[in-house]
Image 1 (cartoon, one colour):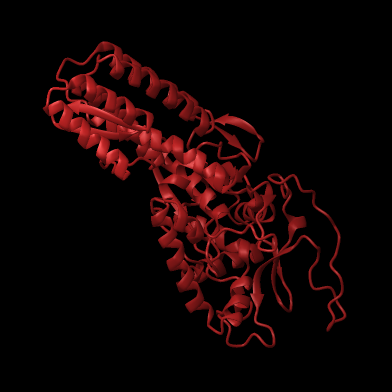
Image 2: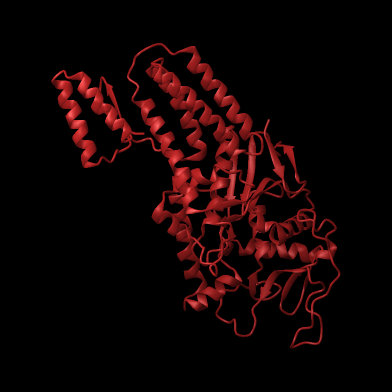
Length: 467
């Protein structure tokens, strides 16, 4: 039985989808005004693993990750780069998809863009205006927070009657309350030529929050199963999504289960350009592979705060290398024989234990603890010689199941980089074996083991592995 931690209720709940066997899942995507950073990589990778695990459980997942290609930050950046909003958006949307590929993140069922959903956004705002959950002002359309009784139920923020300050160029209040947020921003003086669209309530562009509600409604319907995103989106973005969507449709809940990934720090501090610890995804990928980063983040629970450091990443990669060497050793087993009940039972027990841990709110680290214990048992069986190719197939099938979720293993034959001294010793051992000087050859083999080189004599020839 799968349980998930629902940010809305702040407790673990049994996961029961709205439609049996099917899941409607939405994760907030990037605002494409610059390259993504490793905090983004952590969030998108974690939710990719969650999506993959749900598919492993045989759910049919309709997965939506949006692209915000209209935003005030984009307008500012376009001016700085002396370009237009659409060119900027295309440039960094391309970068985003390149990063997804490098991080081995599966494409979503659909990646909707804001600029392609303006009619749906305008229609949704009209509904909110008609139902008196929104009102028009000189500079835009705002959602009336006081009209929505459940506002704050996700973030636990209380509604306030505080009003905003006076506008400089008028003698009246612009918003009814400080908490009211923009659904539509009318074009202001000096903004002519910036991307804008005609609407019944004035030429302009959508506010940030309304975009996700409109794309959710179009691609997933009035109610969805899972909505994910980084912790910092809980308020105001996700809170406002709930208000807009439920006010417009009258359907509660808009989202049945809210999932929020934890923050990522660098060397114990919040990532910031001013601190010099801001790491873009492309900077990461110059040093390490997407698979190595995925393995690193999978060692922590998706809700946990993750402290990134290059040293910790290197340590974790050593564990991944160990698993890849284990898989290589498995594939080199050449002994023919009957499948042993022991290996089959060990594998079945490991699979059941892994699923039990993952069913506890996608507990990645506990799942890996099961895998490490299983690897140790299998290695012991191979050391004792109680292993066959059929046993290999059973174990490899389980690890391929794991890789369908995590996408971290290297299945190709690993290339061992040897020093000139190591090559000389290997050649010497082979020469001694041909001369039937087996005692001397074994002594050379011990020397190589001390240097971290494992030699395995198989029917297919000599196999060389790094310890």
